[in-house]
Length: 221
Image (cartoon, rainbow, N blue to C red; front, side):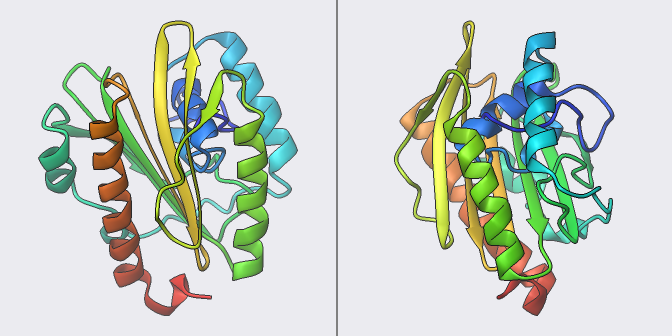
């Protein structure tokens, strides 16, 4: 997901270019809105993220937060990734693309904070707005340095996945659009493997169900 376009962490005020990195590539992760909750990175990463955000966002984020029950709980994430034992930060994703009506980003980490899985969900006013934001995210992800497109996950109506690498650090991310929602997941500090990517895909599918149950008709087209 790597190309995330923002150096700001939507929920904690810290630079999170590492996460953005992963997001951007996988887009949705991609540039999506997930970048806001990630790991730290270099100044050059932050600058690249900032410039992507400036190009991608056309309005100021509203800051509205999706309800917590729209997100998967830590207990479910821990079932797939036992290393992750706590929630680092959660709140509106200030790095979300193109001013969604509401959003939320969460990252689940180990005790050291070095291993993490991050998720972002953005809700747009209508399907057209979600499609526009998705197109921006995909374009940014494909153009991210060090990014490599992966197999398209069978999620939602439009999906994207990939890996990104900066130095020795590699990330995997995926993102997808379904109706008015854009959902992005990424992991970092964990081995990039088929097994971990499959686990992330499984959780992403369950996240869509959780978001739809929480938002009802507000998630549909």
